[in-house]
Length: 83
Image 1 (cartoon, rainbow, N blue to C red):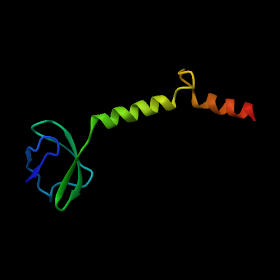
Image 2: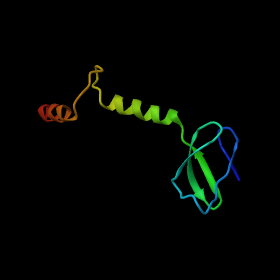
Image 3: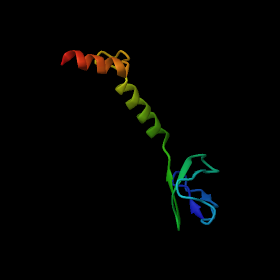
Image 4: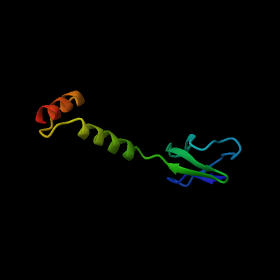
């Protein structure tokens, strides 16, 4: 028997039936958990905050200095013009 890292609820998982990298859901708090180790089973919380941060970083990379969206091809053309 293992416990959810978020709410400490018991999760019934057979270590012979799970694979490393598998995503499980806690029956109590519904957190998504990734199996990071199988013998013994160890779960890591998959945080929604991380997904939101990655989305924000991608948006920042896609915008220019003045905040306008910039096409990657346009950036390459501008760099070539500057040379």
